[in-house]
Image (cartoon, rainbow, N blue to C red; front, side, top):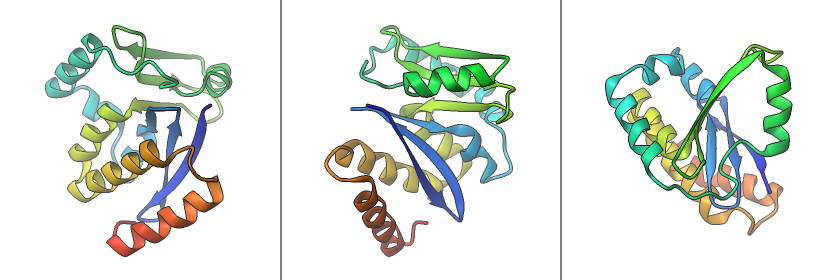
Length: 160
């Protein structure tokens, strides 16, 4: 089962698409926090090397992509896009171009964490904590309970 969670960092929303054991992150929203675009990060040589390594790595093949229903809905909104996968077809990068939402880029959490570090150290820490909680606690709690606890824990740590 796939589920979209929205968390706020510095008052701005970042979407996380959670599957059974993996997380995809809306990189377009991440980039907007810092006045950037995912493209600036994706064209770096270091990023290209990381993507090539991820492509050669058999990543967990559980619902790791934007959920099938959501992906189909997003695809119908877009005029074109690209999908980069690992050797066992787990999505690493999904770019949707055009449509009502004017496109978006989704990253596997491994790539998203590197991207977060490129944007800002405090944001990277927030991303690590958030992804960790999503991977370890998703499915154990209701959405309402999870969000209230998550927000409280983040506020106590000064990460919001």
